[in-house]
Amino acid sequence: MSEVKKIVILFSGSGTNLESIITKLHKKAQRSSEKCHSIEVAAAICNVPTALGIEKATRLHVPTVVLDHKLFDSREAFDTKLVELINSYEPDLVVMAGFMRILTPVFTSNVKAINLHPSLLPKFKGAKAIERSFESDDTQGGVSVHFVTEELDAGELILQESFEKSADETLESFEAKIKEIEHEILPNAIKKLLCS
Image 1 (cartoon, helix red, strand yellow):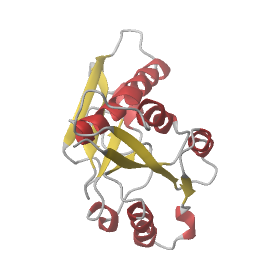
Image 2: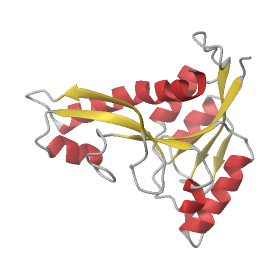
Image 3: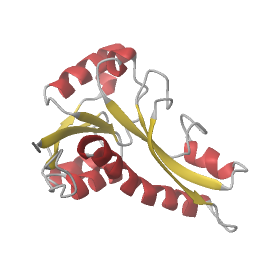
Image 4: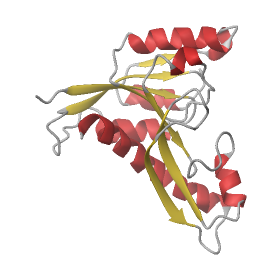
């Protein structure tokens, strides 16, 4: 029997991927599948009180919670509260869409989560992946969606999409291609996991 699948989105910044997920998936019927009738964004959780994405989530009528990591005296204390908050929504999946936190085992061993990373993993794990990928001799750039594990950007791949670097590529054009792929690949990964 088909059902509504619930997700919680974690974000830290402008919320462009958050907005893409909400507009493409939130309460929209997933016709291609009997496994899930629709996907509901149960909540968006942000760790930065000034993040621009908060306004986007609010405007799109998604319950939004700010959990400022600076108010906690350790990563473990923050993650404990975050896990508690996530569990209160009983989601089928947690989606990290630009959530700029290195998570502890308190989170990774208790939450089923996926993450978006702007490189072709396993290359260019961690910070500044776009710049490092652009500056490399690689002929391709790309985006990966993977499961979150204790090891940074090392979980099993769910989806990956690449593109050829053009001869006149600039960092700006390279980043624009990454963003365009991100806005498609993350909703597709969510549907793959929950509805196929």
